Amino acid sequence: MDFAPSSMNQVLPPGVLILPDAAAVAREAANRFVALAREAIATDGNFTVALSGGQTPTSLYRLLATEAYRSQVNWAKVEVFWTDERAVPPESPESNFNNAWSEFLSRVPIPKAQVHRMHAEDSQIGRAAQAYEELLGRLLRRNAAGFPRFHLILLGIGTDGHTASLFPEPPPSLITSRWVGTPFVAKLSARRMTLTLPILNTADNVMFLVVGAEKAGIVTRVLFGKSEPPLPAQLVQPASGNRIFLLDAAAANLQSTPAESR
Ligand code: 6PG
Image 1 (cartoon, rainbow, N blue to C red):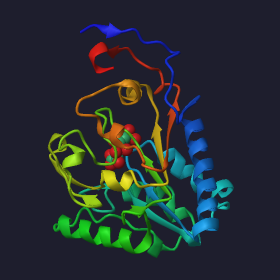
Image 2 (image 1 turned 90 degrees about the horizontal axis):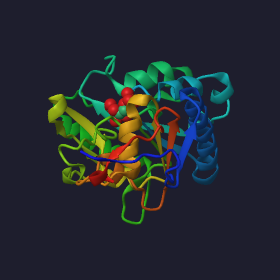
Image 3 (image 1 turned 135 degrees about the horizontal axis):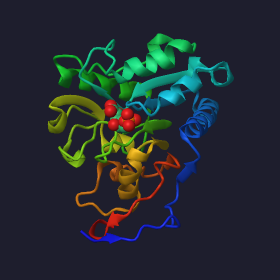
Image 4 (image 1 turned 45 degrees about the vertical axis):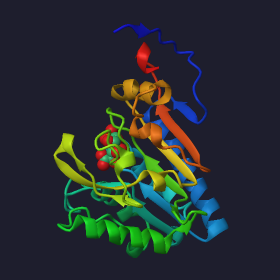
């Protein structure tokens, strides 16, 4: 397979910020989180945010729990949700809720009733997804088409191009559930609960956090590749919201990409 020459001076698409290292990505994300929270609370009376899973956001969560950042947010006006969750109990080390709760939410004065975890461990996961949709419908502003609109959605990217729990298989566009899907992910042999593309693309702000050399290949494909079908992370294009990629230098070390996928 011949490779097109990669060059560090490839023109980056808009909305891509490269920071020196993972700590700088966490600081940038925390500063943006605080600024967006302040703006949303001033404008709309609350701040609705969906937290992403995986390990990358942990350093952001730890930072938000420090006095320097915690003191800048009016937590009584914050409603926290998740982008996706594994089918595990909330006390599991695999749980996205558990990570955010232990590193962050248990250390800030947010009313627990405003922390809305996905009950993906429920044996009736379809019913739990429907309950989550009702929660979104009740607590979030809507766009003109009636879709719930987050002020901020945090996302990561897996090395296969997945984001939230939207994997290449089953194709995200086939997850016809309105707002919350429960795909069986063959490669994991596990069911997940996830916000669907229409919700991700309704957000006012989507912030991807991607760090580490192991992500350089997928970052290159997401930013420059022409996969067919498109990678799930490439399908996140908020219709009227802002999308930003916060990358560290290692993840932004653009790789040679197969010519046919450019
Ligand atoms: C999940 C996440 C998932 C994650 C990516 C990146 O539940 O696994 O929501 O979409 O963001 O897999 O994970 P890392 O940050 O651990 O690389």
